[in-house]
Length: 195
Image 1 (spheres, one colour):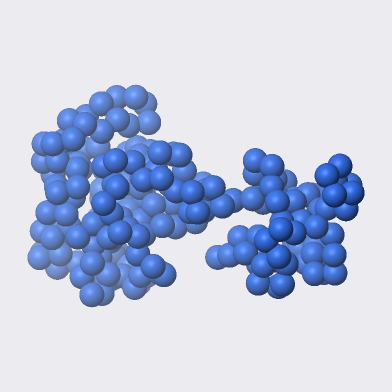
Image 2 (cartoon, rainbow, N blue to C red):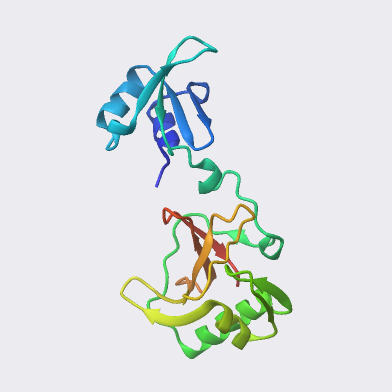
Protein backbone atom coordinates (compact mmCIF):
# COMPACT_ATOMS: atom_id res chain seq x y z
CA UNK A 1 0.00 0.00 0.00
CA UNK A 2 1.39 3.39 -1.01
CA UNK A 3 1.78 6.25 1.43
CA UNK A 4 -0.07 9.49 0.73
CA UNK A 5 3.23 11.04 -0.31
CA UNK A 6 3.87 8.20 -2.79
CA UNK A 7 0.33 8.56 -4.16
CA UNK A 8 0.82 12.29 -4.71
CA UNK A 9 4.16 11.78 -6.46
CA UNK A 10 2.51 9.20 -8.73
CA UNK A 11 -0.15 11.82 -9.54
CA UNK A 12 2.58 14.29 -10.59
CA UNK A 13 3.54 16.23 -7.47
CA UNK A 14 7.24 17.07 -7.21
CA UNK A 15 9.34 16.14 -4.19
CA UNK A 16 9.90 19.84 -3.37
CA UNK A 17 6.10 20.34 -3.25
CA UNK A 18 5.88 17.93 -0.30
CA UNK A 19 7.31 18.40 3.16
CA UNK A 20 6.70 17.33 6.71
CA UNK A 21 7.08 18.21 10.35
CA UNK A 22 7.35 15.06 12.44
CA UNK A 23 4.39 12.92 11.32
CA UNK A 24 2.40 15.76 9.71
CA UNK A 25 2.52 15.88 5.91
CA UNK A 26 2.64 19.27 4.17
CA UNK A 27 1.45 19.49 0.54
CA UNK A 28 1.72 22.58 -1.65
CA UNK A 29 -1.78 23.64 -2.71
CA UNK A 30 -2.18 23.25 -6.48
CA UNK A 31 -4.55 21.49 -8.90
CA UNK A 32 -3.12 18.02 -8.26
CA UNK A 33 -3.16 18.33 -4.47
CA UNK A 34 -6.61 19.97 -4.39
CA UNK A 35 -8.11 17.15 -6.48
CA UNK A 36 -6.46 14.62 -4.17
CA UNK A 37 -7.70 16.35 -0.99
CA UNK A 38 -11.24 16.64 -2.38
CA UNK A 39 -11.40 12.85 -2.72
CA UNK A 40 -9.41 12.11 0.46
CA UNK A 41 -11.37 9.97 2.93
CA UNK A 42 -10.38 12.08 5.94
CA UNK A 43 -10.48 15.53 4.35
CA UNK A 44 -12.25 16.90 7.44
CA UNK A 45 -8.86 16.60 9.21
CA UNK A 46 -6.98 18.56 6.55
CA UNK A 47 -6.12 22.20 7.22
CA UNK A 48 -4.31 24.89 5.22
CA UNK A 49 -1.70 27.43 6.19
CA UNK A 50 0.38 30.12 4.50
CA UNK A 51 4.08 29.37 4.64
CA UNK A 52 6.29 32.04 6.16
CA UNK A 53 9.12 30.71 3.98
CA UNK A 54 7.63 30.82 0.48
CA UNK A 55 4.32 32.65 1.15
CA UNK A 56 2.43 29.81 -0.60
CA UNK A 57 -0.62 28.01 0.75
CA UNK A 58 0.00 24.43 1.89
CA UNK A 59 -2.26 21.62 3.03
CA UNK A 60 -1.45 19.95 6.34
CA UNK A 61 -2.53 16.33 6.91
CA UNK A 62 -1.87 15.26 10.49
CA UNK A 63 -0.15 11.88 11.00
CA UNK A 64 0.13 11.27 7.24
CA UNK A 65 3.92 11.35 6.95
CA UNK A 66 4.82 7.71 7.56
CA UNK A 67 8.13 7.26 5.75
CA UNK A 68 10.09 7.00 8.99
CA UNK A 69 7.78 4.18 9.98
CA UNK A 70 7.14 2.60 6.60
CA UNK A 71 10.70 1.80 5.76
CA UNK A 72 12.76 4.59 4.26
CA UNK A 73 14.64 5.09 7.52
CA UNK A 74 14.32 1.62 9.03
CA UNK A 75 17.44 0.68 10.98
CA UNK A 76 17.63 -2.99 11.87
CA UNK A 77 18.83 -3.99 15.33
CA UNK A 78 22.29 -5.63 15.33
CA UNK A 79 20.76 -9.10 15.77
CA UNK A 80 18.90 -8.60 12.45
CA UNK A 81 21.48 -6.57 10.50
CA UNK A 82 22.28 -9.40 8.08
CA UNK A 83 18.67 -10.14 7.17
CA UNK A 84 17.56 -9.58 3.60
CA UNK A 85 14.23 -7.86 3.10
CA UNK A 86 11.91 -9.78 0.78
CA UNK A 87 10.79 -7.57 -2.09
CA UNK A 88 7.06 -7.70 -2.75
CA UNK A 89 4.50 -9.89 -1.03
CA UNK A 90 5.49 -13.53 -0.61
CA UNK A 91 3.22 -16.47 -1.46
CA UNK A 92 3.16 -18.73 1.58
CA UNK A 93 2.55 -22.43 2.05
CA UNK A 94 -0.83 -23.27 3.56
CA UNK A 95 0.41 -26.38 5.41
CA UNK A 96 3.80 -27.41 6.79
CA UNK A 97 5.44 -30.81 6.58
CA UNK A 98 7.63 -32.29 9.32
CA UNK A 99 10.66 -31.16 7.29
CA UNK A 100 9.26 -27.61 7.19
CA UNK A 101 9.02 -27.52 10.99
CA UNK A 102 12.61 -28.74 11.28
CA UNK A 103 13.84 -26.10 8.81
CA UNK A 104 12.01 -23.29 10.61
CA UNK A 105 13.38 -24.42 13.98
CA UNK A 106 16.88 -24.53 12.50
CA UNK A 107 16.50 -20.96 11.14
CA UNK A 108 15.14 -19.72 14.48
CA UNK A 109 18.01 -21.32 16.40
CA UNK A 110 20.52 -19.77 14.00
CA UNK A 111 18.94 -16.33 14.41
CA UNK A 112 18.30 -16.27 18.16
CA UNK A 113 20.49 -18.87 19.96
CA UNK A 114 23.21 -17.72 22.34
CA UNK A 115 21.63 -14.27 22.56
CA UNK A 116 19.87 -12.44 25.34
CA UNK A 117 16.48 -11.02 24.33
CA UNK A 118 14.51 -8.48 26.34
CA UNK A 119 10.72 -8.61 26.22
CA UNK A 120 8.32 -5.65 26.42
CA UNK A 121 8.24 -5.96 30.23
CA UNK A 122 12.01 -5.46 30.44
CA UNK A 123 12.69 -9.09 31.37
CA UNK A 124 15.80 -10.70 29.88
CA UNK A 125 15.79 -14.22 28.48
CA UNK A 126 18.96 -16.06 27.48
CA UNK A 127 18.19 -18.13 24.40
CA UNK A 128 19.90 -21.51 24.40
CA UNK A 129 17.62 -23.51 22.14
CA UNK A 130 14.23 -23.84 20.48
CA UNK A 131 12.41 -24.25 23.82
CA UNK A 132 13.67 -20.83 24.96
CA UNK A 133 12.63 -19.29 21.63
CA UNK A 134 9.14 -20.81 21.94
CA UNK A 135 8.90 -19.67 25.57
CA UNK A 136 9.89 -16.10 24.61
CA UNK A 137 7.64 -15.69 21.52
CA UNK A 138 4.89 -18.28 22.07
CA UNK A 139 4.87 -19.55 18.48
CA UNK A 140 1.69 -21.62 18.19
CA UNK A 141 1.23 -23.14 14.74
CA UNK A 142 -1.85 -22.27 12.75
CA UNK A 143 -2.85 -22.73 9.12
CA UNK A 144 -5.54 -21.29 6.92
CA UNK A 145 -6.37 -21.05 3.25
CA UNK A 146 -4.05 -18.00 3.14
CA UNK A 147 -0.98 -19.49 4.81
CA UNK A 148 0.48 -21.55 7.62
CA UNK A 149 2.62 -19.89 10.26
CA UNK A 150 3.86 -19.80 13.81
CA UNK A 151 2.92 -16.59 15.57
CA UNK A 152 4.39 -14.35 18.22
CA UNK A 153 1.73 -14.41 20.93
CA UNK A 154 3.85 -13.58 24.00
CA UNK A 155 5.74 -10.32 23.59
CA UNK A 156 6.55 -7.21 21.62
CA UNK A 157 9.97 -7.58 20.04
CA UNK A 158 10.84 -5.24 17.18
CA UNK A 159 13.35 -5.79 14.38
CA UNK A 160 14.26 -2.10 14.19
CA UNK A 161 15.96 0.28 16.59
CA UNK A 162 13.08 2.72 16.06
CA UNK A 163 10.81 0.08 17.69
CA UNK A 164 8.17 0.31 14.95
CA UNK A 165 8.12 -3.18 13.37
CA UNK A 166 7.13 -5.93 15.79
CA UNK A 167 7.79 -9.59 14.94
CA UNK A 168 4.34 -11.03 14.28
CA UNK A 169 5.00 -14.42 12.73
CA UNK A 170 7.25 -16.81 10.84
CA UNK A 171 6.09 -18.50 7.64
CA UNK A 172 7.45 -20.43 4.64
CA UNK A 173 7.12 -19.38 1.02
CA UNK A 174 6.05 -21.84 -1.65
CA UNK A 175 9.70 -21.91 -2.80
CA UNK A 176 10.84 -22.76 0.78
CA UNK A 177 12.19 -19.42 1.99
CA UNK A 178 11.66 -18.97 5.72
CA UNK A 179 10.22 -15.52 6.38
CA UNK A 180 10.07 -13.34 9.47
CA UNK A 181 7.06 -11.04 9.10
CA UNK A 182 6.99 -7.81 11.11
CA UNK A 183 4.17 -5.25 11.33
CA UNK A 184 4.02 -1.65 12.40
CA UNK A 185 1.05 -0.26 14.36
CA UNK A 186 -0.92 0.25 11.14
CA UNK A 187 -0.23 -3.36 10.08
CA UNK A 188 2.15 -2.39 7.28
CA UNK A 189 4.20 -5.53 6.76
CA UNK A 190 7.90 -6.07 6.24
CA UNK A 191 9.20 -9.48 5.25
CA UNK A 192 12.72 -10.72 5.98
CA UNK A 193 14.34 -13.94 4.80
CA UNK A 194 15.83 -15.85 7.74
CA UNK A 195 16.44 -19.21 6.07
